[in-house]
Structure formats: C-alpha cells, structure tokens
Image (cartoon, rainbow, N blue to C red):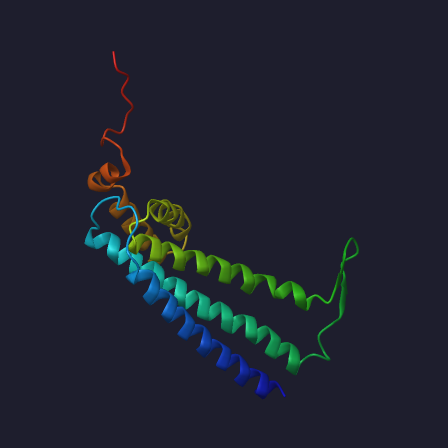
Length: 175
C-alpha cells in the first residue's frame, strides 16, 4: 500500500512539474507591463537563479511533504499519538511536522514568483529580491555570495535611477 501511494505521489510530482513548466512559459512570454529600466545581464542572471532556486525548493518541499506521509504509513503504529510535556499536550504530533514542508514550499513559491517578476522587470520583484538578499546572507558560503551579488546588481547607480532615485545617498533640501 505505501508503494502505491509513493507511485501516486510521483505521478502528482510529474504533473506538477509539467504544470509549472506551462505556467513559466506563459508568464515569460506574456506581453510585458510597465518597464522600469533596461535589464542588465546581472538582473537577468538573478532572475534565472531565483526561478531555479524556487523550482528546486518547491520540488524538494513536495518530496519532503510526501516523505512524511510515507514514513507515517510505514511506521504508523509506532508513532506516538499523544505527547504530554506537562504544560501542553500534543495530540497527533505528526501533524505538526507537516507545517515545516508547508512553510518551506510557501517560501519556495515566493522565490519562484520573485524570479519571474525580475525577468518581467517588475519593481515589486526587485524589492522582494533585496529582502531575500538579507535572508540569503546567512546561508554561508553560497547564499552570502548570492546576497552580495543581488546587492551589487540592484543597488548600482543605473538601477537606482530606474527606481527613481537621483543617485545621491543623502537627501538634499532645496533652498
């Protein structure tokens, strides 16, 4: 029975990847909305990296989500149905483990959407990438390198002018 569930989940994963491929093709080929500024090769690279990271993270989250259920099917009788910590009691603690892949998959979806937004030259995606750079910074060494690369690409003078800043780091008061 668990093998059948695993095969069924693999079929769902295959369908999910096909759907994701269709959505990405449609999203990247749609007519573009408001153009902020011309893309630099750095921004295109960052967009593709976000799309790849988001897609791989979604696949990994999907696999880990199904792995938890697979483990529950195999070891269902030996998993405790209740854990009492004294001040709180968890009924069916296995359900709490499902929260982690769900959070991981939602963050992965955010990465994917941010990458598509960067490739489509959307301003909100550039802000999301800068926020993501802060969190990537703590994933040493590759996340730190990627974070510095994002900051370099999005905080240079050309990009700042595209955001509407004059390039001055201090605010000037007209006299």
